[in-house]
Image 1 (cartoon, rainbow, N blue to C red):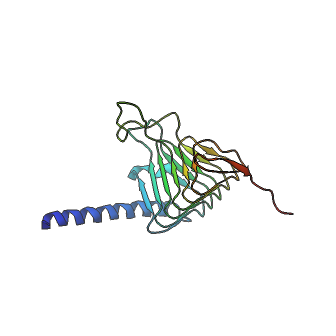
Image 2 (tube, rainbow, N blue to C red; image 1 turned 60 degrees about the horizontal axis):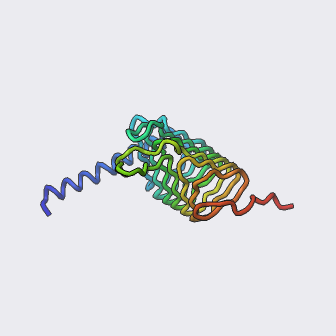
Image 3 (cartoon, rainbow, N blue to C red; image 1 turned 45 degrees about the vertical axis):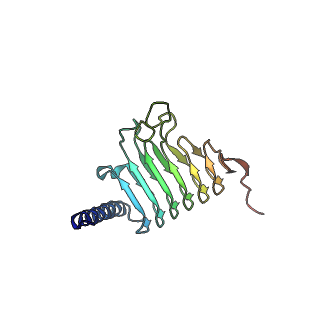
Length: 199
């Protein structure tokens, strides 16, 4: 390999690590009760820190990837991330708050390798899927308080999940979930009501 090419690749990798470290440090400095694993990736516009609002005691675990872009040329909707007190984003989870707002309520958890996206690509004949505009009719995700998303769940744009609900592992949530229900499957459907407290 050409030594100059090798050096260029090395410097590019170091720059990317430095940028990620700086962005993570900015979030942790602004939200001092945040518990964030050092391998978690924060990706947001340097001037867009105000698009992130975290409650107290939020936990972001190893290898989670959180993307927040307030402005995108592909969508007229602002991207924002609002996470309530004591919420948890588990290992490997991906949250993409661009082209809409993602709200995760108090005490809610995104399970391992879960995916929550605020906007999706537009699929139309003659329109480039990856570089074209994002869908604007369905945007944003609202996850209520005390909600659990099992491992490998995918929550699609436009979905609202009510308080005290749970989504079974591996589910794809494409429709609103009322409060106090357990859903699962692809696409997710109601399985049963959340049982009441034991006597």
